[in-house]
Length: 113
Image 1 (spheres, helix red, strand yellow):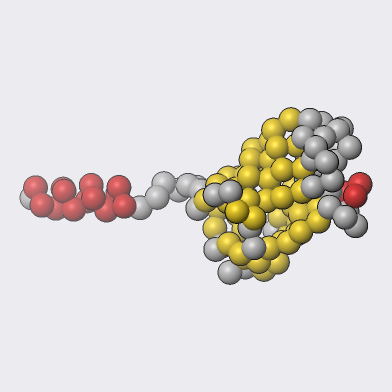
Image 2: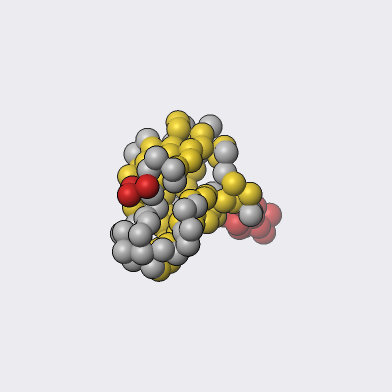
């Protein structure tokens, strides 16, 4: 009986809580004409599908951070200089992030597998 109870506890601990994030990402726009999305200090090129916590550091009042992809369309406000936190579920596909007022020069993308 003790073994069954111990096995049940171990199984519960091994399974992430519902809604737990797969990973943590950091997005930054500004203060110059730069926009990035990083994980562990490296620019994101590919990610595994899942739920991610994204901290957006909006460092300029002339930029925003706009993330667009399958099932995701989130953005910060132009004019706001503050930190945002989003939780998003990324599905297989291509995602792009841009600064809407400067989309021709402040843009990048990544693939979710």
